[in-house]
Amino acid sequence: VEPVGLDAAGDVAVPSSPARVGWDRRAAVPGAPGTAVLAAHVDSRTEGLGPFAGLVAMAVGDLVTLSDAAGRTMTWAVVARESVPKEELPTDRLGALHGPPVLALVTCGGAFDPEARRYAENVVVWAVPVDGSPGAARS
Image 1 (cartoon, rainbow, N blue to C red):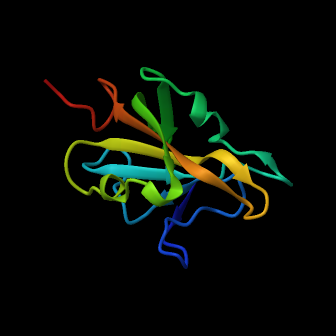
Image 2 (image 1 turned 90 degrees about the vertical axis):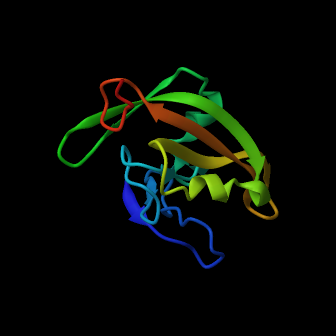
């Protein structure tokens, strides 16, 4: 995982290799208030599948585990998965810096246009911390 900013089009930059995941450094840190955004290419012709290739199959209740550089882990439960046309990516929700901790995992999906060399959609998986993980709601 590497910190990223915006690309020339004003979208969240994604590392060039599908083996890498980008963390939008303008967004929240995972576990802190707001939405943490992690994005990666789904695949590449030369490198194969990326780590987010399975997002399209994730279901509500599936678990995601993140580890930080210090070795601490956070577990998140998927609460929603959506596929949206690239032009309709919910940037207002992805840019939230306040509110409860949310994790957004973003990759490409839908039909691939070989002429444009891009997928038509984005897959977004939304997750919240599970009890006991940093950032989880305490009762």
